[in-house]
Length: 104
Image 1: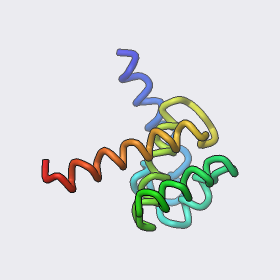
Image 2 (image 1 turned 90 degrees about the horizontal axis):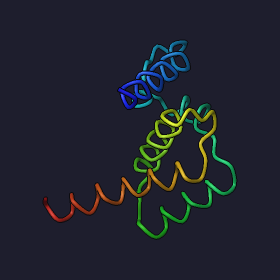
Image 3 (image 1 turned 90 degrees about the vertical axis):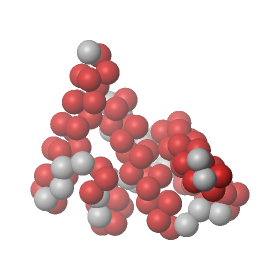
Image 4 (image 1 turned 180 degrees about the vertical axis):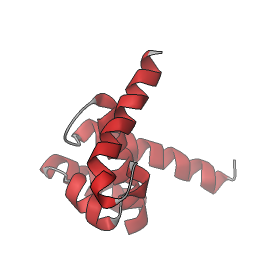
């Protein structure tokens, strides 16, 4: 029940944030909304640059990581994306990419 409550609250936050743009969840964020609601501090930006360089990620992957980072922050009730949110999102992207490349 606690998990459901966290998810419902995160969805409420997303909906409230994105409603003026005709969107209701982070996955629908346009590039403009990403720039507005997924601002990264210097530490987070450094993590992203490192991930792009080391993992060879595309601009599309960058946007996806931002969306997932924003969702993780929402689930935690955090107004700003923090370094650990970005790190977790990069890990998920790495797992996804690893399994996709292996054909699993």
